[in-house]
Length: 376
Image 1 (cartoon, rainbow, N blue to C red):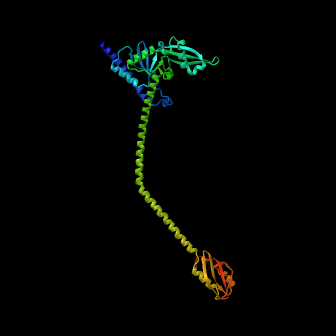
Image 2: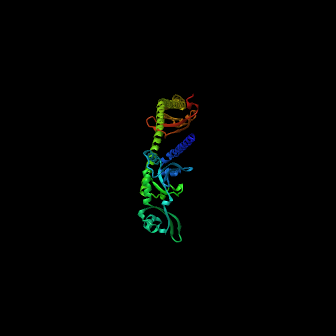
Image 3: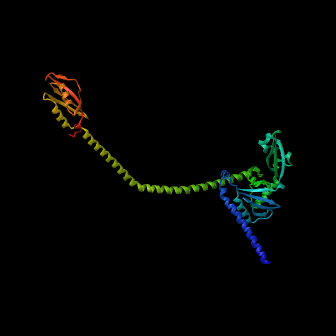
């Protein structure tokens, strides 16, 4: 009999350990998602982490949302005196959550549908506070409340508002009892809400200044953690880039000397090509230029003894010679008979030298034929 009891106790203990490990696993896998700011979480459809607090007949149940629904993490009696370890365990769970949401039992809540003019829709808080003692047995300063427009009547210009209230004495008492157990509540919602509505700040019955302060602090901490993680990622990436930069610089220095030699060789090759082109130009020019000796020899054979030259100019393929002769007009025909010249003409009028009584002439001709290249 004792063995059976031992086996039962062992299985119960293992079940509790398994439940604890399972709950921790869900919290741990959601930790990175919790680091993301609210804006990014909304873009990626990441649910915020919320620890749900349910109360039934004085027993408090701590639960968490998961894809499968609600999972129980811990339970305790509100009236028990917790020891230090229990409080620390609950604080640890609370520290892993973005929100501590109290699911307020329905018997603590008063609901009423109020019909108001449509013009009051933008100032419902003030209107409901003013009308609280008329619509409920309580004054506005005695209750916490939320409201929601559930329907509209455009024809009558009316709105139907569902008013949900809880007395401050009841809620403050519950919050104080939970605080004594190591749990600080950030949101209070009716337990009848769907899981998708729990994170809606409009549904929060807790005094707005408390919930707002906690949400601001939680959001600031998430943002700080997120940016710290982002900075670390950037630093790691920059470290890799810096190593690549150093490697590139090292390789650049290694190839700098061969590159300088290659540039110098290219410069020398360019200069050599220019020298070769200049040399070839001179060779071509010399080959195409007429030989002065050949010209003089040709003119000496053409010009008669009564004529002598005083000047001779050669430019490209044109020759100009000046002198005096007893019959300058006869020289045109004599020069044209040569195969070396063509287009023979006077380049200036013929004049008479009064001292020698001879005709002064200036004749221009163009070179042609094989002798122009200096080959003969």
